[in-house]
Structures are given as structure tokens and as C-alpha cells.
Length: 315
Image (cartoon, rainbow, N blue to C red; front, top):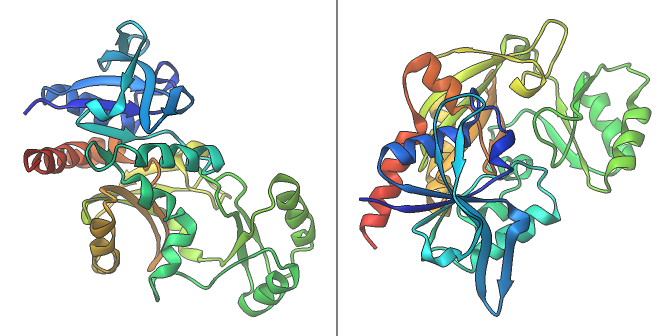
């Protein structure tokens, strides 16, 4: 089966092919005989119910500095494609949300991965709260008094922006840290959104596990270990990836959330696990597939394409 695949992403020219999951998805698709066409979200246009984009056909190769060769610019009706990969990076802001509304115009006739409606309905740090018993103690609010009361109960806490990504804006505050007011002021200067206060989990010093799931089933995991003296383990801010096995608790967590991911059409998902706790369910543009393949030989993007092909064969 040869599929016509459009990829909605940040500019392909500027990515780091040595760690980019979207690039690995494209390589895998090409190796399986699928054609690729790429565009950026601001190039979409919705006119009288028809969704088009201005983009280019592309062939990719794992050659640093020469990883993409483009055809000419053209405008195409996105409903003509078999699959659209929704892969631009956060922030999960109104522009991102609008792009999911646009893609609703073609899904599911054109299979959008992940389902744009459910991407919009599953903000990554809020979605996890719908599964009782999986999170550490967590508060999401703009109420300053509530945050102080939460810290008084929990002791050390971690403060995060609600719709941040890549570890941006994450800070640990000890039980007697005098900087809580200042941190909350900074959050208010940046955004009107609530913040997340979460009980600090000491196990984070041993790593933050990224587990990739395809159609609700775990494919594999990597461990992201923070640099010395840091709590942020994201690879984008200096964390180190290492091989890791799934534990019984990891599989239990996947079993709790997996059926709901499948039901919603959230096909390619990355979850973050610290110790025994699930902290995030990443549905927008989850990463980790390149490191997983490097450490284990398991290519989560191949598993994804096998599932996509099976779904398109039924159409």
C-alpha cells in the first residue's frame, strides 16, 4: 500500500535530524513506499469548508545538512491525502488550537494523526487529571492562597506553566523557599493561565521515563536523567537519555490510560513517568522515538505506520 502523506510541522530545514521524531516518521514512511508532502501550520487556509495548504513534496535522507530535497511550492486540498501527521511543536496556544479546528474539516476521511479534536480536548497536563490515582498530589489554579496552602501541606513542590513544553518554566520550590511570590509573578507576566503546583518527587533524580504508546499499547521507553543539580530531565534542556525497561507499574499505568487513548484516536502518545507516578500525557508532538530506536532497536514509528496502514486498508 502506497499512501499520500502530508506532514504539518515546523520548518523541516531547521530540525536536528539526529533526534527528531517527526523526521524518523518521515524516513519510515518513505521506506515503506509512501509519498511525502510538507507544510507549516500558517500555510493552511480554510475557504468555504475546503482546507488547503501551501507546501512542497519532499524526499528525506539521513544526511546532516542535506536531509531534505523539495519539489516546487504548490497549493493542495488536504482532503486529497490519505494521512496528515499533526506534528508542529507546542506551545499549545490559540494558534495551535485553531489548527486543530482546521483539521477537523478533513478528519476522519483523511486520517489525521493524532485526531485533532482529541488533541484539542486533551491538554497534556490537564488530560492526566482524568485518571484517578496515577498522579502525585497536584494542584492547578491561579489562586495564590491555594498554592501557598498546597505547599504548606506538601512541603517541597514543583511549579510548572500549564501549557509549557520541553521543561520551560519548571522550578522546584522548597518548603521554606522565599521565592514563591516572585515565581508566581513571573508566571503572571507571561500568561493569564493557571499554573501547576505538584508535590516534588525525589525519584526524579534517577530520571523521568518517557514511554511511547501506539494506539494505546506501550512500545518501549527511555529514561531521561537530569544533569547534576537539576530537576529538569528534558533532552531539550540538557537531560541525558539512557536505556530502561518497563516496570510492572509502568505497564499498569499504560493499562489504565491505553484504552482511552485508543478510543480517542490518539495514536502516537508519549507519557512521562517519575517513580510510580504519571506526570504528563503528551499528545501534541511527542518525541523520544529516535533515542528508543538507538537504545533498543525498536522503531515506534514503524509500529505507528503498520497501524495506520491497517486502518487505511479498511477504507
